[in-house]
Image (cartoon, rainbow, N blue to C red):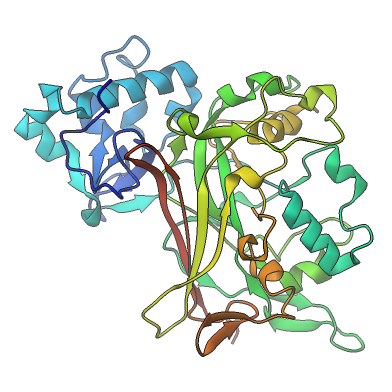
Length: 423
């Protein structure tokens, strides 16, 4: 069988071949309305133009106005059969053997826009955001740092996917600057506590699942059906002020140390595009309770990388390389657990994985681990080290899956640290 190929030239190292087609939302000009799109090579395909041309002609989408909306929430609410129909339609339209779009110069001009000319926006309205704690290596390292090596992971961690409710209002699109937060930190000697700009600002390498179809209040989602409720994944940097968090988190958990900003990559890569890259999830011991026991427990082989570029420096330094497949709790277990008490999820809700760390020191997913809470400065180049992030540092997360002759990628998730607004 010949490999699927687009009539649009796609570089071999592009994150956005025809096998991917991730969904996003863009504006062409500052005054124009937001419009849904998929990425193909170095272009965005405007789905509103494709819809207005009558090319979504399948039974589920032919009469829908979901691609005439300023976000993807209505499309997500239609469910997996509609997502599959859209993907199949778009792969056919963009294929090298299909003339409908390829040979229609007017439609091509209206619908295919260079990425360099558009502004990417948050693709969804996020009603609620929950952040999990699903990496065993991260949990062990954090526990060792703060509680010692005797019992670094709490007993409950191996029985349920731990999470807390995050702040949806401060979730931003990649490229948004990060203003160093102010708050209270632990006293350096006797009280009172320190107050001022965070002295321990950190990145967190995460991914997040975007909820597609939700569930009714009081009706949990079966773990073996949870995949049908997840539209896709994005890269996420859940920036953390470690000093603020350390002082505030007992007894109710993270608050101001996390809620100041969270950055997402603009393109949602669907679970259908990720299907060729499934792999077995780690063996869970003890076995999970029946409501979390999956017939087939799957992760995804997604290579992840973080780079830091200090101000005034040309070259970025790679500070970690890890993989999504290190997660102990799967995204489907996370969603099933979230709903087991009857909590209703809604289209566009976001479920963060928590920091993704691997077993080796060069695969840790945050500076807290990489520098062991500042005890071991991390070299960026021959004359620059970091304990935590400094003003002017630009952090970029990338992620991709390597296929046979193509790459399914997520693009980048980037933010630059600006000084605190303190007067």
